Image (cartoon, rainbow, N blue to C red):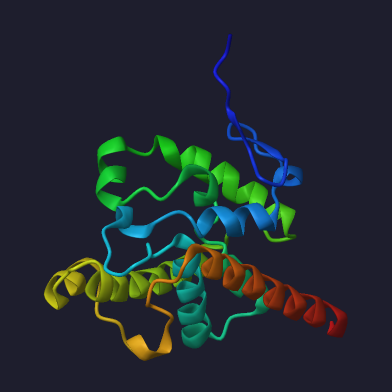
Length: 201
């Protein structure tokens, strides 16, 4: 008997990790899952875990402020960690130990998620670089405000943020249900912008 390679989602979908179909991707599952996956393996200050859903909102906020991206680009920024609703959030030190095998699964999932929402299956290199920069800025604030890093340590690993301050981002950890709601609402708001932009063009 072969090992099961699919996960049943609360929506009722069964997502195959080896061959994920866009038809089995639902926003409700992504928002629910990401709101319950902890960043930093849960080693953060506060009464609640700092979730990947909240991190994604912070990254999209930083990306929008720094690059004034299109609605489509902002959607990809919001979904930059979306595969983690299935595979969880591996911290960088563990990725270094495990090696790159997980990247294949992550890439397939990202492609399926993008196709489900009418986005390019592969992110353009320049956009990927910009989102990564926003991600590093978010990580700097998470590290120093929540995860106990000194400013010097955080600067060494993530760089010195420019043009973004703690007051601009939602850094205090939220309850999972609130992070889930905000993530879904932000996704829908960007979708409305995308539809509006298409109608104009």
